[in-house]
Image (tube, rainbow, N blue to C red; front, side):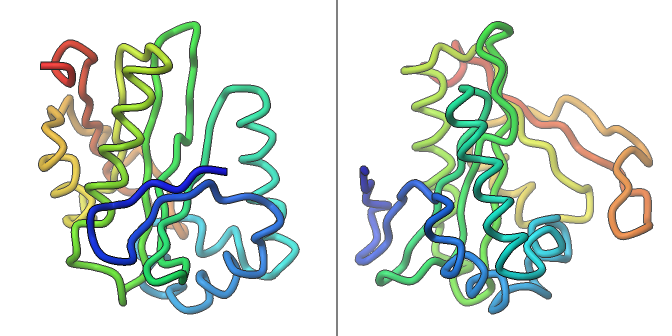
Length: 181
């Protein structure tokens, strides 16, 4: 297992695995309403078993080299995470996502964690394009994409059904040559 410091005292990025389902579920319970405004994990991890299945799905993706999930710990408490929701090595494309409970917002944790993940997927895994897909209503996540130096590619209007409401989905991206410069 690895641990990466996020540059703030007590903040770390670590793999998030199925054996941590209880901790993940407790984290979702603490932040369910806040996280659920825009992120489906709040609905997908509705109990301990579904939380375990969600993490197992990402363990399966890691084994197949099609995705990854990492938690953000602050003072040894899981408070959020970043993930490679999609990773297509043959196409050189990955999609990064994130979530955070309210007590950990405003500290730059997501930006720093996403930067580590993007750097790894471009420099180590050879991805050419990394996307950030976000509801147009999710201003904090859009701000992260901007801080990461991503370019807004466009808006998929009324594309994303979430909790029975169709949302506009913004697509942001960074290309390997842009990231490396």
